[in-house]
Image (cartoon, rainbow, N blue to C red; front, side, top):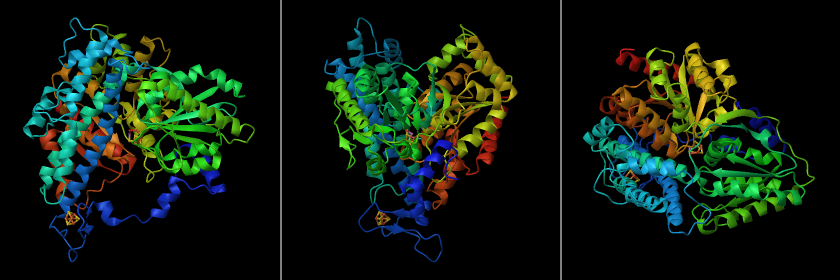
Length: 629
Ligand code: BF8
Ligand code: SF4
């Protein structure tokens, strides 16, 4: 089985019939994958290499420079964290520059859509708003953001202000509080160069520090997106390929940053008549990956697919354009698109793909660029009109939009004076056993969505409250688990009581969805905010709470960075694939055991999703016992 998603399975059959190569075919062509790489014991950090460490005693045990297996494994891992941090914080920096351009009057298509969030973020960061206009206050917030990237001398203020004081102290004790996002990334590149840091323990501590830099970038990304585009509130939509419409101009937005897609959403609304003039019923906008999450959360734009299956909506023959920004965009979409007349439009100077159409996006003329992009899609529709399409009639209802603000507002309907109290009371009385955040990607090595589904069903049955972000949220959206109906079907009795009480207090006439969609991958920080609020209210640190995270099908370096900061924040973190560390016994033991004594969090590696759910539930029970529950 390649996927649990029936739309994906149908499209894979079509791919086979039409001899279209997909990511699954390319995995097959790669097999068997390199055993040294899988264990993390190959190194190309200098031109004397590549060096490999033999898993057998009679083979080489050191690289040419003398690096051991643990050194190689640790260096590889922390470089992955640095790359993830560079990606997330590049995204955050892009938002900061957009807000900065608006401050300077150079980005007329943007605005501070959520002044309350701007004020809340400023207050949290100790920025006085006294006597300032919105623009002046935004300028101060932007300056504060830029200071987080620079070469500082103080620990990152945006991290310090958003976690518990206990976390700050625990990280400070380890010397793992970064002083600048960019400097932290650069330092990891320095330390992993030939002949610098060879101590695996020291490298891992550096990796944790860099992961905190990643967290800071993610948090900035979420804060600024909310300020510019609004904080999500619950929204009902649909997910999967059945949302495409034969006689509409179908446009997918793909990548991560809402800077472009937000404007496309607005301009698509304004260009419906132009689409109709071209003979279409209108424009249907859909999302892929985290750009899709961003526009689902804020506008109810339906996600069409995620991650590993991103080539497949093209095979419907109905997709007129895929507009991409950056991250997680497979270059192969251009090859598939060629066969179906779909236009792949790249928009960022740092992310081009040969064979695509490049329309460089600039914030100074965002609406103009969006019009140009949608115009290309309308032309593609005209060329496609009349050709047969193959749209799988598969789609699910999805209720998304659960920012912390939205969750607190929903809880306030139960207890206006003390909104967190109902959650805490129900954790104490056992109706809610704990909370698990599902994060991360799909990975072609796992049947798509399988681990997510097995684990959610098992944990829900055991009364665990489920949150999700990224392609994990996408999996649950496509599979119908973000609905009240899924709560009725899968939630254990205690969880059902709580989700129903909140839903009914909010006039939904039924429960909240089984899995709460908290947004894109940078929005994992929303889950941290919720956890920190609960920890602070209880007066305990995060590492005592019955809260855990899982990345059951993780893929990217960004996911490695997030997993590491989730551990650093004190959570047990499940990984559903084996990361390339097993060749380094010391590193493996630190990540799965030793780190628990230092930070409370640790990795649980378990490829069997049923066993993984049991292990996470056991971790939750251990913490409940620690709290005397
Ligand atoms: O940032 S979950 S495949 S799309 S990395 Fe990428 Fe992974 Fe999807 Fe979003 Ni996150
Ligand atoms: Fe080999 Fe050392 Fe160079 Fe890596 S850094 S390639 S282990 S010589």
